[in-house]
Length: 616
Image (cartoon, rainbow, N blue to C red; front, side, top):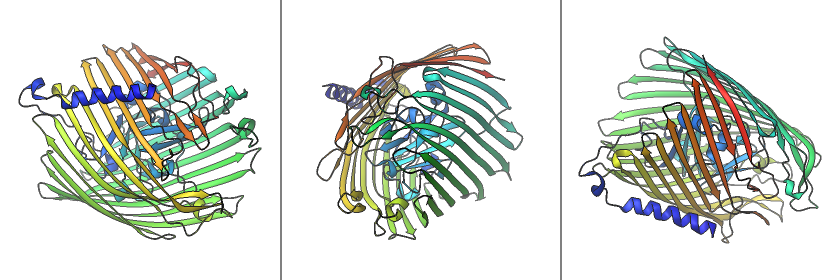
């Protein structure tokens, strides 16, 4: 009944507002202010409000307002995204976009592809929101511009650029589960150079990764040190070179598996240590009035060590080296083209298993865009992906949007193909791999309508999406090897409402209805059919800032097990005591819902945190 209530409520609200005739609200003509933020993950110069694809941009202001510590937390509130974590802070956290698998969502940090080469997925557990300027989430297949693994979409995390006179800050937060975080940061510009830098430390006593309702009481702690920096230099009027780096070192306690019980997770003294660094050197310059060039040289490194009482110790390394060349060409008043190439070397090494492999790949892409005065937009593109271990792949994407300027209405449609490459584990893991695997393939389309009312104070939209997956890579229990045997489908509706009720009060709602099923019609693992997020934000004289929110997630299946749906409430408060001193407080899971994101794994009950930030 809860599911039907939430689904019906948001659908009725969205439909009512969408089809209410706008001329009755604001006369014959309405100007629409365009979002000036360009979506870097689209590789074009279009703003978020002009891009035909479904996109969400989380700004730095929204990040500060939320008071979340980690990227995974703010993604939970995002349209189309499903986040699951197997325990307390620091435990493995993965994201499903539009029903696609966690290894079918491409994650980038400042243009660096950070998915693990061994498993294909990205673990969000160590990525804090320190020094992040914005997060871009492009939903739907993006393989034409970004190659393999961008089937569900792309999540691009962008580091803060230094601006204005140098300024510095120090912050502290502490609270439930003996959790403490300390952060130092500095940013600014000095002539043609600019910089931003943060250093932070998190320590948490945690709670049991194995759910306490099954008799588990041992706490699983976490500690992490994070460094993030961006240096930039502007040269020759419009040239720019940057050095971007992020480093994390963490340690986590986790519980063991006991396959004689169900669910098979019980208290244990297992431990893991993780070390990551990401480095990029992007160089950008206009070679002519109509020709911009960007070269991004980058690398990612991930080392995971684990000591388990269930499995042998392991040392796993992932390394990726990338050279990405992009050309943006302006072809007259209405046409532009993106042409580029990408060269990658992917390495995976599992020491104890004697596994060390390299996969080399090249990508050549082109996308042409027609933009008639931000009213009528068409794009079409292709990409040829060459791989050293499996058959080459050609993908395409076509999309279009039309904006009715007078009424504030925009309609859009997208059709695209995508693919997910077999991982190094899929292809080469000793005794449990299949070197003959071919990539998973997908065909995707979506149609949507967005509406702006009351001179931009109310913005809402609804999108229908449909994705078909072929050659799914699944583990065959008969052969004990992965095989190209599966089919799946994910379709549904994404709807949102953003309403500036008064100058200092705003309301936001989003609802995702996602039917992700396999070829037999059974729900895919860990995908919720319904997700609803609502928040009310108020600001008083730029001194007192408050936010209350509620999140609902429906029941999920995980093999033979399942986790019930749940509803969580949170509240956030900040108060500026002085011009340079702010105190913060937040409460999570205020009604102490004893929920599970994954069957058998624990989650945090009611908890509270408080802190302060000093700027100087």
